[in-house]
Figure 1 (cartoon, rainbow, N blue to C red):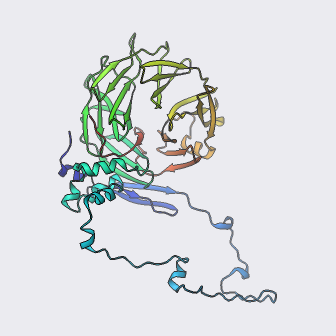
Figure 2: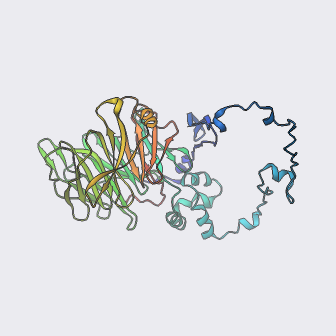
Figure 3: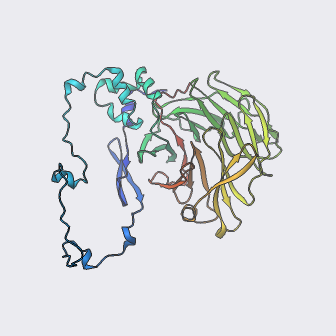
Length: 448
């Protein structure tokens, strides 16, 4: 189902960008002209130079006389060729406002105009559609969608999904723009569903429609969605969705699970055939964990009792056991997929709350062992998990790992390559029942 252009105009996602500087900034989130609470962005104030101590020496005051005979008076002169206004801006040239001629800019070739607009962040396109009729029909223009799909994205986003009075709510946080955008999610059916994940601009949900287990895929930007056919063994189980951008298709993998006294086989949905195929039952006598990751055409799944690692090859449909020993005293283990073949393990270590810490390992495929690559600084760990029994979620994309705390409502981001930890500001993570995943806005992401 794709909404009409008049309905899509209501998706003018107006977010709030945090200003540069320090302190606490409050601003309302506006959705279709309605104020929707406060959006709070926290930034740590920069300490004053010199440790914050105040220099009270008379020699340091402006306007004080230099009476030392050994220090001649220095006469400051203006550099030749600079005026006063230029000096006041630290030698940055000041340019007058350029007057744009309407007759010239109105005659831009259409392909050049589409190439320019394709570089505008996706959420800002909705605000530009009110300029003229031509821009209002951009999302239906194949030429613009072609340019938009070929341009690199502005960076990863975080999609936060929750229900308020049984009404689906969704907010997207753009990491490069540092802004939250509210997306109306009332186009989805009134099921008891939950977030599965996102890939290639599509978002997958699963849930119960009465007593029937169903799976749906949607594009939040175009609000197009559809329900997938029922599985051969249509029971609730763990799912993961992957998108192939080359052949413009996607697959949904339903892992092996236990229902009653029966082991359910692995099933794979292919959008090209619009059907599920049944594959091998995972050769493990223990229960499966919901913590899994997909990278390099392989699905990695963490098993429990005993703790182990299984790998599913999507090309062959076969399960394999990976004999990599997990770290001792691991309390919460999450598998996170990185770029190419990188696979990370994130979890807490320590039996006592005062000695607990969060660590990150990477799987060495050659030696088949977990190698520690980083450790969360204590100040971030204490702020994220104040109690040893608090739950947290962890997921990743492109060597970025995000941590969310159920009770604290905070989001912490770690860049594996740059070794940088940073907080994610905003109010969308304050609800304890939020479900969060990485998301890449794509207008051309097809649900078929």
